[in-house]
Length: 265
Image (cartoon, rainbow, N blue to C red; front, side, top):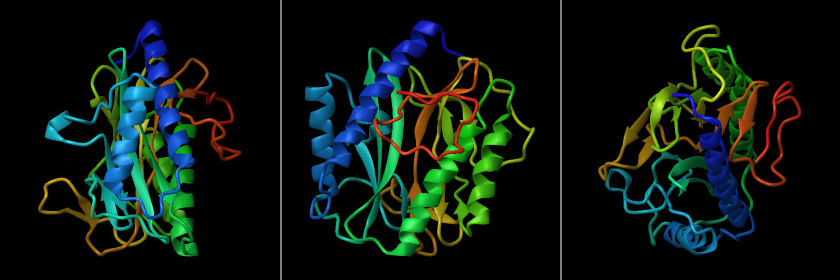
């Protein structure tokens, strides 16, 4: 479950490369693009510019390099030529990358053009909730501390936390132990140890937390049609706290996010 120093170095390299993928998307005008076009751009960038492998392609029979989840889609949205991004949409891109046998996983919810204040607030609060969870990571902390920090921030702001999907350990495999729930009680669950690597990836809904899977077997949507947002980073437990392996250059980190820890790419 814990990684050796040389493995952490390789995971950090995968994380740095994956951060560059999102930095490329940050420079991309999304309005008017289909999610399949975004998928294809990301694949070219990973393969040709970064000499890496899109780890999601072929995993569990999935044919694409990312998930593109628009508005009420909670997660696992399938890229499509028909799904064209329009001003006012929010869209989460969930992307994995493998280099030298080790995988990094990250996601970001983008605002497309002029987005209404309610949607902006949901996206901002989800980002803050992820960082609340990251802030709880340190040796000796418990998994329940992470989930409690996320859920408390969500509820204080009037949002619900999706419970069907969670973060996960990561390394040579995309999904390893432990599971990282985004709700919980402080002081409960597995104790964190230096060398553990996992994702924190809360999904917050404007309405109720209930979700359903569409007939394609992949796309998960809110049952009440409300908006959903998600953010994700891959993190490593260090001797002094936490290292965010997928941190992007210039990424705004909340001022109180990790006071006694380290966040770097």
